[in-house]
Amino acid sequence: MAPTQGPRAPLEFGGPLGAAALLLLLPATMFHLLLAARSGPARLLGPPASLPGLEVLWSPRALLLWLAWLGLQAALYLLPARKVAEGQELKDKSRLRYPINGFQALVLTALLVGLGMSAGLPLGALPEMLLPLAFVATLTAFIFSLFLYMKAQVAPVSALAPGGNSGNPIYDFFLGRELNPRICFFDFKYFCELRPGLIGWVLINLALLMKEAELRGSPSLAMWLVNGFQLLYVGDALWHEAVLTTMDITHDGFGFMLAFGDMAWVPFTYSLQAQFLLHHPQPLGLPMASVICLINATGYYIFRGANSQKNTFRKNPSDPRVAGLETISTATGRKLLVSGWWGMVRHPNYLGDLIMALAWSLPCGVSHLLPYFYLLYFTALLVHREARDERQCLQKYGLAWQEYCRRVPYRIMPYIY
Ligand SMILES: NC(=O)C1=CN([C@@H]2O[C@H](COP(=O)(O)OP(=O)(O)OC[C@H]3O[C@@H](n4cnc5c(N)ncnc54)[C@H](OP(=O)(O)O)[C@@H]3O)[C@@H](O)[C@H]2O)C=CC1
Ligand SMILES: CC(C)=CCC[C@@H](C)[C@H]1CC=C2C3=C(CC[C@@]21C)[C@@]1(C)CC[C@H](O)C(C)(C)[C@@H]1CC3
Image (cartoon, rainbow, N blue to C red):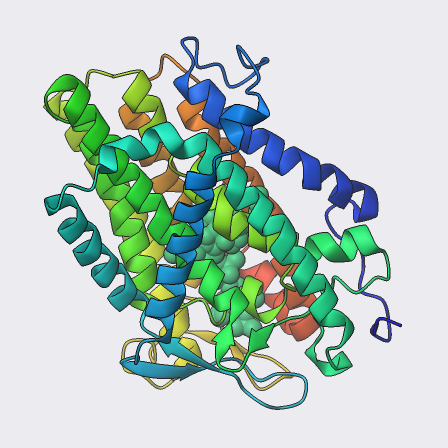
């Protein structure tokens, strides 16, 4: 009998029906986007021009490439780390340890790819393999989530996530049952959240840039901007590696949602703008490019400022960079910031992230809605995520959270939301 938890957590994502729909809808959306980006009309809404057969999707070469990629990233994860960080306190009062070597993995991957290219590795051939690669990544995510679901059957109750243990197999498969599934020091969720998908995303972007150079003599300014902005975002994530306090690590189980999200959704849909630009080149002048760079820099400044301020405060509230900020005390002994970035709105980091999302789409012009998919999806994701986080914070901090909401009334966008 599978272990379940005592009091049931409220069901999220529309319960079992919502989870079943998302199980189908997420991969279907990803394939729709991949097909639409390469089609002439590049329509976000409306059916794709043609549906690929299994002979287009299935490729043993893509499977080998994908497994080699996962193997390489796993090997880089196991290399000695410059630092080992401790996670949040768990239910059994223990803390897990995590290697901090994500940026090292990015640099070593870049070196290996560079060496490979100088030895004749045809990176420009990768765009042709996106469909079969996305197919094997999706298959891997399904099989891996099944393994995680089975693994949770034998996990102690203290290792289970607060949600994802409803007893409904579809819902639990989707949300994930075990909080931090590991084999020895290898933490599956932490590995997947930052390595194969994020690094894969910038590699796909680079391959699209190379392909554009092959086709048109040189990469377009729009392609340079999209590559540069997204490389900054991924480099920042791997440099700071500050995911140990995110909801994904501390609250959500590891199931299909995150396995598919990390391994398939991120690399193949987050690279949509570069995919679109390869097939639909867009003119971009220097003045407009400068405005877009300014928008990205503003978003990044807010995103990094807000995340660093909270992380510094959570690590050491007496750090001189945050010691002067106004706070509210809570019954748990932890404090909430009410000035600085966190006094402007309740999720300033989401605001910065959304501004960057806009800057990533603008180089693609305004003739098509497709490259704005990321902005639309991300707005929905963050609005939903913000509501989930608020529920959890209200539960954790009670009256102090209500006081925070009174003092800082806007959630993400000052005076709007
Ligand atoms: N590109 C992508 O696809 C995605 C990007 N992101 C990004 O990831 C980053 C992390 O996001 P996420 O994990 O959702 O959430 P946050 O980093 O915003 O973390 C929320 C937590 O911060 C703490 N907190 C909230 N308010 C305060 C305050 N006033 N003072 C001190 N602590 C506070 C609470 O935890 P506690 O009190 O327990 O510390 C709360 O649960 C964001 O920048 C987001 O934009 C997120 C999802 C997807
Ligand atoms: C629709 C779908 C499949 C949902 C799954 C959501 C995931 C794609 C995202 C949930 C939280 C994420 C984070 C990042 C990437 C996307 C996912 C996995 C992140 C690693 C991106 C880089 C940032 O700097 C970050 C480290 C703050 C961020 C953490 C959350």
